[in-house]
Image 1 (cartoon, one colour):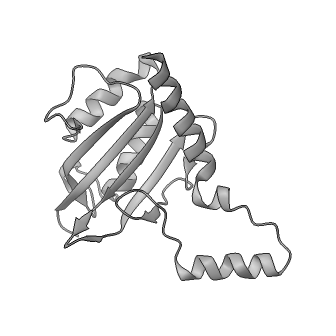
Image 2: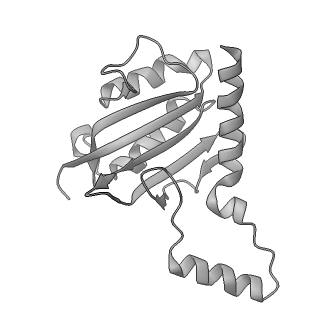
Length: 174
């Protein structure tokens, strides 16, 4: 697929102290910085946004991996900081005033990864999930058949709620 770049964001809601150094090392090696600063701080902070302006698209050739860069990063985030809670987005962002699709993954240690491992959600630059017509049609079909459809679990709202609660709690602690 070649090496193209796009942007990536990691909103770190919380990370246990013992897992911060491996996560810091990962983010620094991938070119992340604390927003709006131009570099990484010496120590990560809970409820912080870290950005990368040159995140790979397609396969992760700079890291020497044949796996898609977004999926590879999600795996590494879960491996080096399994007790952290976060939102990870990568995508092109805005072009000519249009919001372009990106990929989103959510992680909370109590719930695991959303969506399941090695899958992503299509979303806009703000991380709002885009439900494709096929998904919506399937939901309507299932609801019409009398099946209970839990939209919160299908769109990651359960993860969003827990991640937001942790971020808010850390904001109040400081």
